[in-house]
Image (tube, rainbow, N blue to C red; front, side, top):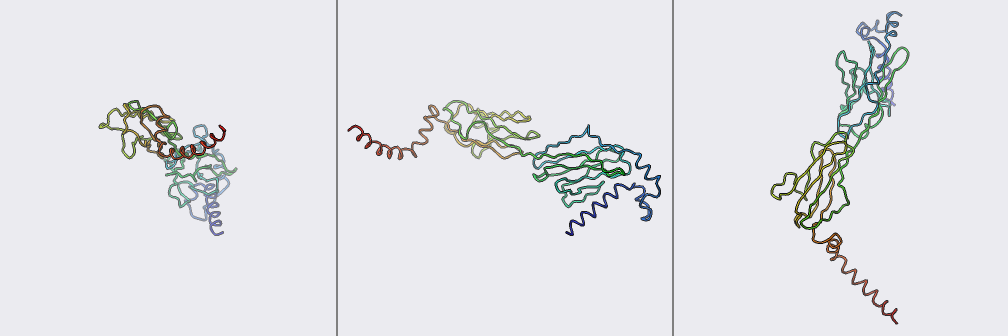
Length: 285
């Protein structure tokens, strides 16, 4: 209850501060309010407007990045800009002052500029939601709403969890980096625990990465050998890694699968034969 009362007192202070010209606030406390009706009239004549044409109402930032929510106000005069988080109606900033203990929040404003930007560093999933930029005037509150979307980039390798290739053929793996507002700074490929982007000892290994809305990284290994079998991992700078297991063997895929499962499946096959054989003998009678 105590915290609620303190928040209401802060909100009331912010509202009063927004309605009072700074020139008057600098005077003695007895003259802190409007000295006459002319001061109020001068303030009311300056019509406040939000420049919504040059600001986005939706901002997308990847997890851990920095969000910039722009609010451009014309004819602000002596009034004050406040940023409010709508999900809990928490006043984050008023003017250049911050009213939250979360140091990730800060207002950016250059003197003489119309732009009052709310900066949120190291964004988290809980920062997702709507924020309000508001100006209190004699005729009410003028507001602009901006929705912040937090996305988590994902990496996946095309194909299933296994990839089968013939001995001597080409291993070609494609990794997709999705839901990333900005392309990753790097994409590394690993064979088991060894990074192979710049493998010169093996030879025949190349990596081609095409950045974009969906970054694609292709790993190519020519002349597949038995030693090329194993786990392959695509690791980007801004997402969790993705992996696939590659089997290099002679013959087609089914033959490789049969050889791989022969040790575990032979016992079951023998048991089935002992069950089926008596049935066949009975049926022949």
